Length: 68
Image 1: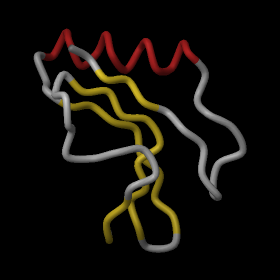
Image 2 (image 1 turned 180 degrees about the vertical axis):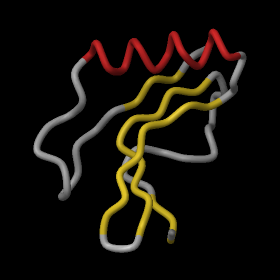
Image 3 (image 1 turned 60 degrees about the horizontal axis):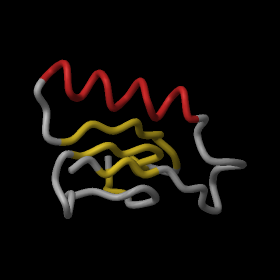
Image 4 (image 1 turned 120 degrees about the vertical axis):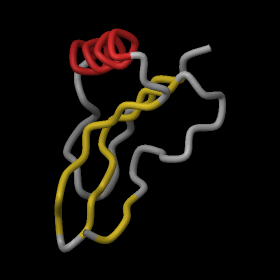
């Protein structure tokens, strides 16, 4: 089961468009990856903006972050 997520947070004006989410899913599947994401580097952190995963409970989530 695929879990495609995209949610806005305090740093983004709006959720990513469906075309972007669909493209991320196609790329992840084509490359045979379990998880694919688009992130933003801001204030010394990598912030996950779009996440697509084949896993029911992916290790990262939209809005999550880690230090650079």
